[in-house]
Length: 314
Length: 131
View 1 (cartoon, helix red, strand yellow):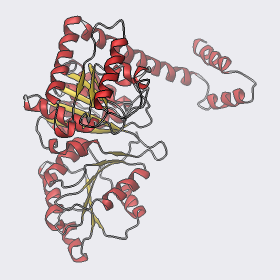
View 2 (view 1 turned 180 degrees about the horizontal axis):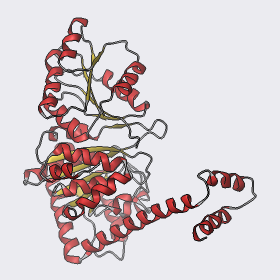
View 3 (view 1 turned 180 degrees about the vertical axis):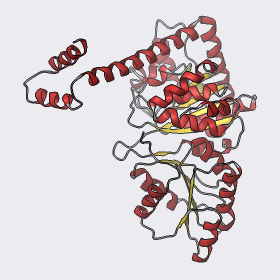
View 4 (view 1 turned 120 degrees about the vertical axis):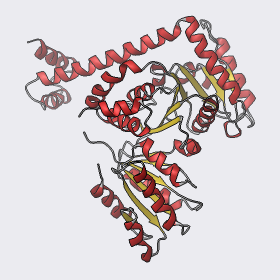
């Protein structure tokens, strides 16, 4: 199917076309390829913000407030809100929108919910593709709200320019803040629910953790907010903009985007290679048969790998 | 390519009873669907704007306040106005039998009243998608 008409309508600002294109790229890599080839030239202009943090930290509420503040400045904002997919049924409840429904009718806002569909990095497998559609649809800012993360869902670093790590008081002692993983990826730390007891301590612990890091050319700020009361949002917006200024002035902007594109291209090549290797063996079920051989200890995993690769070169 | 069925479960109007909508949302989730739940007190305009942005296959309207004869047809009308014709709209709640035909004439494909097994609704959705 040709997507030219939809793409034209999307570029002209039609939301339904934008939504249809997202559906296509979210579901089928072949269709995604057709579309992304056409829109590539229109992408790369949006400031991409990742909002991440543990479940219940207030990511959706904070997203709502950040979107409103940006829209009040006359900006166009796209949102991709991700919630988990059930590993059993494949279904999901996508409920992030509940906190953002008074934005539903705003002409300058587009909100899309996505299920992770088995993908584990805090995003869904094709979040990247959906992002490109919103980027081409000339939204100035695109906010990606990840699923509630635990300690190591850090894939947001592969697609966002600015990452806001949302923390709340009461999640654990100061050892939590020096562990590796999600605490390392924040460009800005937002301590939400900072009207609660323990908020100052949480902020202090994060600050201490940040002060321990030696080789940092920019120390991430820690901003206290109360998202439900819209408190501290002005500071947060300022920090978001300052971060973009820093990225551009330091050359990190291009560096980050280059690294991310490289990852993406390598991933695409790997996927194709995998298909080629599998299709070069005599039949589809070959790999299943080989697995039995490994299970029965007749072969080990590396022997099977080498056999597949030999099939490719012969 | 097989893609999950996407359903918007929406509560139009001022009615604050969402237990039923949540039970339905959960049942659809367990049937493998992606359910977008938007919470209470939505206007028909919000519901339609959400359905468009989320590109859902189905809108499920839940209402127990008695305002179904106004709010359900309004959703169907707004969809028509925006040229959305690939979307199944169904409704549920305490809807008197004598109102059902009128709602169907207004563009609501099916009405599910209290006591309907969730299985029946799931099968209905699967068999009546417009995509």
